Image (cartoon, rainbow, N blue to C red; front, side):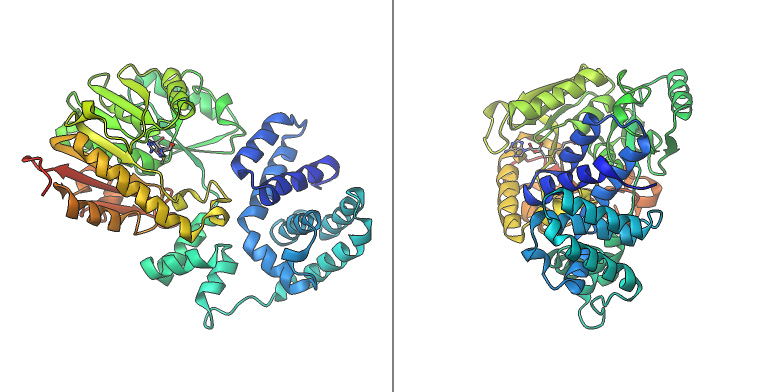
Amino acid sequence: MLIVGNTRELILDMLMEILEKGSYSHLVIRDVLDKYNYSDPRDKSLVKRVTEGTLERLIQIDYILDTFSKVPVSKMKPLIRNLLRMSVYQLLFMESIPASAVINEAVKLSGKRGLKGLSGFVNGVLRNIEREKERIPYPERDKDAVKYLSVQYSMPEWLVYKWIDAYGQEKTQRVLEGLLQERPVSVRLKESLGEKEKEGWISAMQKTKVHLKKHPYLSYAYEISGAEGIRNLPGFAEGYFTVQDVSSMLVTEAAVGTMEEDGGAPEEKMVLDVCAAPGGKSMHIAEKLNGTGKVIARDLSEYKVSLIRDNIGRMGYANIEAQVADARQFDQEMRGWADLVLADLPCSGFGSMGKKRDIKYRAREEALEELILLQRRILDTIWQYVKPGGVLLYSTCTMNPDENEHMVEWFLEHYPFTPEDLSPFLPDALKEEGRSSMLQLFPGIHKTDGFFLARLRRKEDGKAD
Ligand SMILES: C[S@@+](CC[C@H](N)C(=O)[O-])C[C@H]1O[C@@H](n2cnc3c(N)ncnc32)[C@H](O)[C@@H]1O
């Protein structure tokens, strides 16, 4: 199948929007796919694949371009730079498209977009790369492991350096590989559905083109691949399921303590989720409470809270309420109110890079310090909402010890909490790693996004040490 005419021009425009104007890739891709109703669904998946793939491999692609072009990528005209990037992606990673077609289409498009004078340059660089693609002189691992891994897996050098420092070279490489692997979307099927409804849903899903598979960690988690849009799938409108990574479902298991503790039937609980939008974990907790107790789901803005409300409406939970509140501001009314406080804090988000492909290029090392201060500020405030004897569940969707293990250590030094063994609440595959109070999940190593969770219990005497 060729990428021709409007389709490749559309890809070029999307890359310009994301890489030159700084728009978020997942939003640009979603909007374009929603807007353009292709007669051939294969066109749709090609647009998605080439745009996402080019972003995912950007560092490697730019390295190759810099090796084969006299003009460095940073000095090229933006349109030419992005045209070359998407073409190199196709030459290297999409064998089904003939190289001659990729190059001819790129040459034509540069002319069409008013850069006819550069058609020869585009042609020359791409032909050179096509000829030499089996002999690209990549950085040598023995000489510079950070540069080697950075180019091979398209990850900024400072992040590779940070991960090697924290987790070692072997683990870092597995994580980098994991981040590039295509992973299915995971969904949480409502546990409260009756057997008949569950079977009906599974059989309706099997009649669609998507592939449905049970996730090995949790009985109610399923993986879906090949879906063109989740919203059109059976059971979505009825609120049978919600999209949620399994790592995030494990937070609820550990927070509510349902896997072994309480024989799987939690008593009535008061729960406060201080950073809740779009509401995935709050709704899961509401579900686990079987309609009892109360979950208050808070977030910073009216818009964010409207996302939580929309989700509650679709999923139909009655024991949950969404509120606008800034977690940095102490709320006197909540002092000692909660059996469980969920602190799923804003973080660097490195664990979800597999899904949001531009996070890795947007991340700035300097910004991490600010995030850590924000996380501390929120923790400084919200620990007081936990009843003496109650639980604080701390989580982030990142892999960065300063936001994770070191943050928990800092917290325990300052506030009257004790860490608790996570293993009773985890699936067998994770029990061993969860024996301490903290669990770091890694893509490529675990069957989840990158994620961190820690379970901390407030001491009965309740006062700060
Ligand atoms: C990791 S996300 C939460 C995801 C959510 N727990 C879920 O499972 O769907 C972090 C959230 O923190 C919110 N946030 C950031 N700063 C905040 C603050 N000062 N007060 C309350 N919420 C805040 C962000 O708007 C964002 O929605």
